[in-house]
Amino acid sequence: MSAQHLENHPEWSGRLAFILASAGSAVGLGNIWKFPYIMGDNGGGAFVMIYLACLLIVATPILISEVMLGRRARSNPIIGMGKLADQAGVSRGWQVIGWMGVLTGFLILSFYSVVMGWALSYVEKAANGAFVGASPDTIKGLFDGLVGNPGSLLFWHTVAMVMTVAVVARGVRGGLELATRIMMPLLIVILVLLFGYNIGTPGFAPAMEFMFAPDFSRVTAETFLVALGHAFFTLSLGMGAIMVYGSYMPRGTSIVRAGIWIIVLDTGIALLAGMVIFPIVFSNGMSPEQGAGLIFQTLPLALGQMEWGYWLAIVLFVLVSIAAWTSAISLVEPAVSYLWERFGIRRLHSAIAVGLSTWSLGVLAALSFNLLGDLTLFGKNVFGLLEFTTANILLPAGGMLIALFAAWRMPRADSAEELGLTGWRYRLWWWLAAIVAPLGVALVFLNGLGVFG
Figure 1 (cartoon, rainbow, N blue to C red):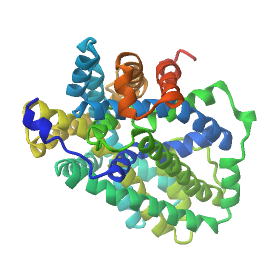
Figure 2 (cartoon, rainbow, N blue to C red):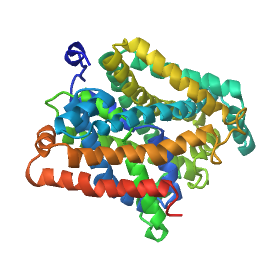
Figure 3 (cartoon, helix red, strand yellow):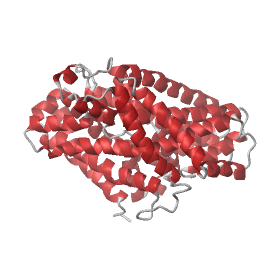
Figure 4 (cartoon, rainbow, N blue to C red):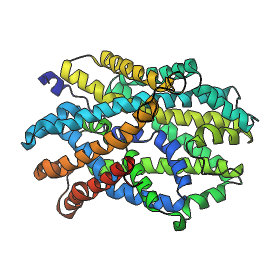
């Protein structure tokens, strides 16, 4: 890496910019789409309590560790981990953390952009009134027709990738920071408006009871594993995004305080999303335990029968699309940053190159729902294989290695200096990052591989 690149390494304008960008990375379809339905599948309020505990003891120390490594290195994850390994006097083999992060982000975006395309297409469907008064068969037909149509899937997948590359190509302050400064407040405003509307609906009270009245009779060992897994995945850990965002963090910003704010925003938005979605479900006499179809089939059916349902549907799917967009741009950034720092390729050209590569793999993921449906490996189509490999292997492995390097290989004087922690506060972070978090992630890893049944 040249001295010029080091001198010109970009920075966020301040702590708020970093928090909004990192929260935007964390707040994605996992908050708006996945969290409500796994909450529904695992007993509501009891799951929330377990999830929050897992978030604090497993996800938080890894988040803080990943941001710390990024800021200490002041570089992209690949070059940065090599630099940190040299400083610590340990093997450069630890650079695998950076390579895994960049690869994981690339692979996730290839299928994530397909789902982002679904959300964008549903904005168009909602605007055309496709859900108004529609029957269950009609709603099901809309989704089946979307995923079964190669041309439609590829169109929306392409739109999603163009939107993503357009932001990243504009740079850190002019692209990533500007976009998240607009989109994150807008996302929160939309959620608050939808929540305000739901207060007056008949499903509001039972939805709040479902979410916040713990029913521990429904808690099983699987509930803990699901909560642990989602607590880790929701913060975009192990995919290079948080590390590269940390590298743009100003030196005077407290990593711990910023990390806490990221967690507060991420968790608050996930809970608010549940308080938006479940009242709609309960108001229409539907079950909250609808799995992944909750967003793309159950809610359109419910909204189609509601007063103001036409406008609510548009706003809801704009919300889902924004959440997906803020995460997608963070998945591109690690690879773009590496191409610029390692080879001096201009950001615009780097973003286009990464975008085209990701789009090409995403074409296979999109076509796995139709034309390439018979192309399987280990019983999974391309979309399923990409999702399984990243969620169950690469992400947990990356998160575990981040925690282990930060706690066991990085000199304690360096980590204490970077975190600004002393005494019991530093010891608490160290024990969580060195022992508790790796064990927790190991459970996620083994559960994802089916070891626990």
